[in-house]
Image 1 (cartoon, rainbow over the protein chains, first blue to last red):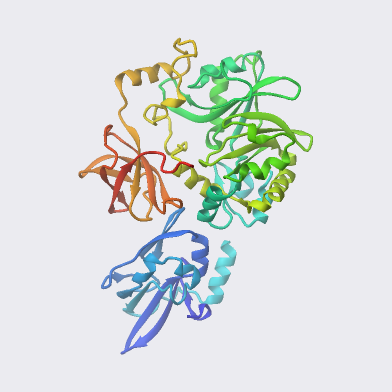
Image 2 (cartoon, rainbow over the protein chains, first blue to last red):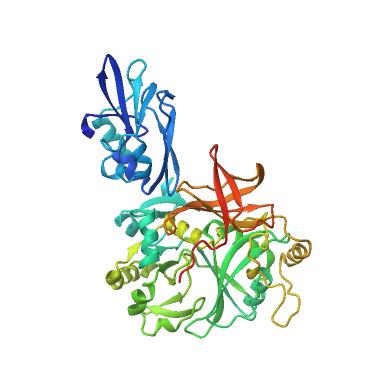
Length: 130
Length: 375
């Protein structure tokens, strides 16, 4: 996926949506900026398929040598897939955070929250924080 | 807030190297330049340089310096030879650990003999105040906090010796571990010691603040052939953990005494003549030795890479037996390691315990310390 076409949380998760059979499916990951800030990833805790996630609430955590960081869901809905291969291959997040590094897919309940940032706004936030 | 933090003479150099700077004990210090794991591995396999100028450096001049320190430190100081460095503790009257320190016995180029104490950055103020309170008489010992007008660099790793040899006009390979010498760099005095906090061979240099940048550039020029890299506090922590070296505020605090911390080697209850030494905390430590300790420091290994961090609870057969004090993924061993205190004193090596990692019980096996020892 192209980073410039994604939407972002201020907490560094990305989301893209597609329509399938009248449902909206969101694919969620964490940004290249987040991966670079974390460095030395050692562990990721993913939700189970079937879990409900809520926009703005924690759905899992990512751990680096230095610290544990919660990951927040950009959307509300039901988890329909998780990227199990990722947990044993966290370096995928360095190489390809926006395609192979996807974390979970969620069947949306309702619409996308309106506090998501587009690429330009997210880039601006990252530039200001680093 | 940043402008209130203390900066080492290498602050701008760190920023120019791309360091991520953090507040550590009121100093702005590099936590990492690139990757903590890479800096860790470079220290184990080649050579890295750490800026450790935040460590407190306190100099004791005058005829009674040794006597004062002998009363303050858990190991004897009066029998130290010139050029010797000793690891020791400073305890309060109850035997609680106020700090762990290195004490150096040195001779300046003018022939003056003095002692130097290197203390933790987080404890510098406390220790200076403690010393002053124990020794109000300034007439026989002059105590100077030299921290801000000097800097301290640690060059660590198997290639440390070859890296810094060109900076000195004598054979530094003849210097033994825990030895120090007042020498010079660019015609100014410099203390060179064969010491470190990584578990590898290495040297530490104490320099005048204003020559630190130039000496750093000389070290990097000399170390280029060995792929020298800068390393930050992140890898300093994972390196010391693998070597099971305690860190103040984690394995050491005022509620713990040296015997519980497994640091009996850093306490001399008797002087070299076999007489009981009179030092602060000595009576309390003798009592502990007689009555036995209530808890003990252990090493733990976990299966995966997920860390059991400071403060996590340790369980044995469903019962709480203690708490983790430090834990991390070990870059050398490629799995997670931890240290902690437990109130079960005689757990055999290989005991199966559990650690509550944010709500999930992870299995952990007791193992001997250190986790890593260089060959």
